[in-house]
Image 1 (cartoon, helix red, strand yellow):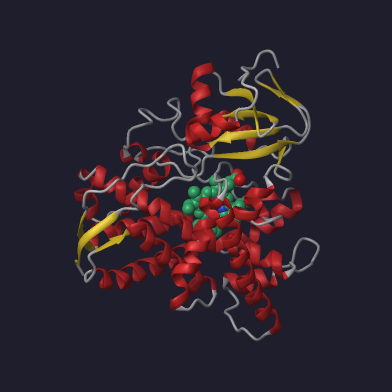
Image 2: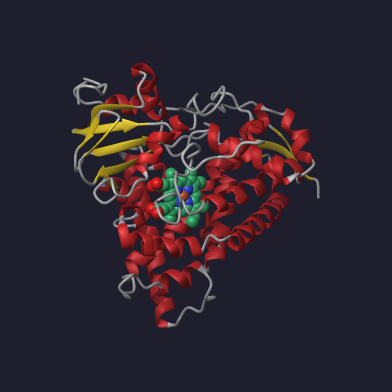
Length: 416
Ligand code: HEM
């Protein structure tokens, strides 16, 4: 690949860990090329970013997911052999079940439950010295996600279960203790949910037929086979865990409000379009999912670059959401940019690109948006609070990241 810039460093694993969210973007800018080759984790990897690259990445004739996700990530974040690692008919069939659980009806229901739960929780905050928003969001969303899914959760378990779901997510870029914490969290959660799946199948646990628990317990694949109970648990966790993970975006939402107080007045009107634009900009501006990986299915050439069967390819999520060709002043927080913008399937990709029903794009985007809007509305219109001095900086190196302090709030009072 003589035409394609190659980062000649022997192995860039360390650089990747040092540059985090900016690793791909930094090189795309340096080489003035959407695509470059490098070595990470002992293998050749093609890295790319921008909307054309995103479009290519979602071409299922050219790329597959099987074999692209490291085992250490399957054992923490996704679960082994989960939907994220499947292709073709298996993927398509399984994907429809996730989408059926994330319809506008479910999105609305989840958002309402979240608002009610925020109001319930905040009644206790008025008597406390301070609260940490991220910690409260984890518990709030864990209660809501489990209740909605039909998963019994005793109040005394909420904190541990919520911490386990978050530990799976925060194991992503981690090595050492943080990685092992994620593995243990996953084992505990899988055992817990698997026993519930088994109880539903035995009939000892009665649950609504339209619940996520019942749906995963009874799902039949494209050949008419039920999941084994462990796989059913993995896929049910694939619905609950990411709902809990919306906590990260909620914490960034609070930070955005603090840093851009001029929007508070606008948002007080409760106009859905204003809430929507603000939330979209939070999802674009702040870092969460860093990049995605896939494997080349068969040889092809794109932009003079030879993609060889079996090669690993990374698509830059954070960098594409900050690509100056797609976004004016990409490093400024500016919700109005979404006002008259028709967002295409490949230029705004915080939760992946393309079409969720045919590709791997996140099925939970509508849910994420509705839950974030309810939480923003709560923060602006339902409570008042002070923000004491604290370290609200966030690293662009740690993947995933979060404001250091988790967003401490004081002197909380209710407006309702
Ligand atoms: C896939 C991000 C919330 C369920 C994905 C992908 C990303 C992502 C980047 C990968 C897309 C790809 O591989 O092409 C996020 C972020 C969220 C979020 C940042 C906010 C916290 C949710 C929610 C759900 C969910 C609320 C609940 C159903 C899934 C599932 C997949 C997925 C099941 C795998 C889809 C597939 O492989 O076909 N998400 N997501 N996510 N997400 Fe989300």
